[in-house]
Amino acid sequence: MTTSPPTTDPAPSAALSGIPARAAGVLTIDLAAIAENYRRLKSAFQQRAVAAVVKADGYGLGAEQVAPALIKAGARSIFVAQLDEALKLRPLLDRCHPAISLYVLNGLMPGAEADYADNTLLPVLNSLGEIEAWSRFARQREKALPAAIHLDSGICRLGLPPDEVARLRAEPARLEGIVPTCILSHLACADVPAHPKNAEQLAALTSALTALPRAPVSFCNSSGIFLGPDYHFDLARPGVALYGVNPTPDAANPMRPVVRLQAKILQVRAIDAPQTVGYGATHRATGPARIATVAAGYADGYLRSISSRGHAWVAGHRVPVVGRVSMDLLALDVTGVPPEKVQPGHWAELVNAEQDVDALAAEAGTIGYEILTSLGARYHRVYLD
Ligand SMILES: *Cc1c(COP(=O)(O)O)cnc(C)c1O
Image (cartoon, rainbow, N blue to C red; front, side, top):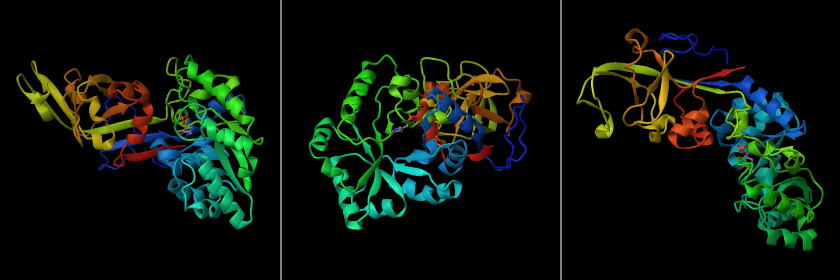
């Protein structure tokens, strides 16, 4: 945490302060920006309670670093997807704050009930079957056990579908031994505010809630927060917006950028027609050109779909990716960059102020979520706080 970020020097040299010479790529993660994004979401959520989703290793950015930053910013509920993720994080969260609710979105794994109870993990009960198992376990332990209950309001993924909600309404004793700390539901189209599904889900949730005991209600992911107060209820569960991805894809990004990604230039060579670059010989020089070979590839989450369509930045110039992205390497056409500014050991910028995660995702034909969660393990990571 003490290393400084790579410089923004227009002609970055090989020796960046604090970055070991062996580093082939540098992933800089701005924890202060994550904390600021938490506060911005809280403000958009009218200062009500805002949890933090840190599943998939904090969307690829390191749950062990981002969760403490989010707790420091005020988060008291943390969501992960899998039981194993929760078991790994629990001791760390306890050291950060004595009362963090840690939820497991993927629910109760039958047979693993004791893992949740013994580690004060809150399963998100996703079906009547899971409710039955948790209730039975609570009776065995002769102890009321907390959990979230997930109502499916229309995404048809996890959560109690309408027929199970109806059975729960008819037989409230099914919840015996369970203390619902939260009732949640998940939006399918929150990033498309005009989508009719949003209002349909809101109506379905509102009606389903009458079948359950009163508990704080959680409906909004990142984009849901921006659908306005009708959708807010009590607790928001943002993930991706905390990490700088735009939760309002049709409008300017209200979040601060969090990620910067640089990879080292290994070689620069002059080519000429009819030479070709990379696997499949998909890029053919039409005249004299200079090609920089850069140390990042699809094994680092620089997706192969970026081949021949993406861009990077070298010494302040926007340069195209040419030919196929391979496992460990990509190629840039740097013909337009003065030769002294593009040398082995200099850095190519893959994500920076000019090209954010959303822009790179668009070039890859995917979404920012996938770019972040694909970032490989080989980058030298720098955390700014
Ligand atoms: C991943 C997830 C979230 C967070 O969604 P973002 O779009 O990243 O804000 C919230 N709730 C559930 C159930 C999820 O699976």
